[in-house]
Length: 358
Image (tube, rainbow, N blue to C red; front, side, top):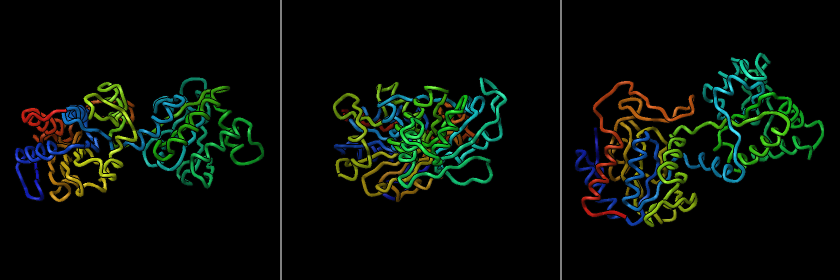
């Protein structure tokens, strides 16, 4: 396992000690990224509690697009397996759902259980690519984007707008479903769009059955939500500065805290790949990153410690998108690399030994 302190190669013990000194000297530290296995997330929350720091996952924009709408009006959701097995109408929003293997899997099957068993499956898209590889009926998005498009579609569905517009045809197709599903990426749709979508789904359920299937972000955000809930009773943007967990999506937005000068030090946790923040290298930072990642170089942060990558060189509990659960993932090629959880625990233990605690 490699480590660097101020650009120079160091052993892990020296890097841990330097990390302790940096974090102990900070007044308003933030723990960001959190793209890691569950054990590392748990260790990060323990460290934040000791430091009086706040936490913010890199997946925050995706998570809060959903959580904001959920707090306003709830949600009617389904799973990937139920979509493949039951849906006779599937509406695909935007571009991101086309990137993975979900849409080809849906397109290759027909409903096999429930009221729609044996029916022909209709694939519809709104604001997505004109993907000729998959047969579907495509509807263009409005100039204002997906949120505006969903608002207009809901108006046609409720009868507040009428005519032979394309959205009137789309609304008729949705109401004709026996079991319908909307597939979307929360970050792409945005909080207002998700709120409008859930309203549309409630309208559809007045006469048929319709559900949402939100795609998980690729940075372990769903695991972070669950761990934060069972650890603090709250969503992931949490601060421990006043000796108890406080949830505030605005106050504990790490990008805002750092841009405003409010935060004076950071710990970037990304044992799994995550987009590198623009502040990395400008703010005094401890970076705990996976071996072989672009950030695993001495110049990316004041202190860099590389760890095993969950599912590659070490095992770990990760969010499983296909099953929609947290599940243990065996390493493809196990090594003796240290884990992110182990490094975080060592930093916390040394802070406590030095008498640093919130």
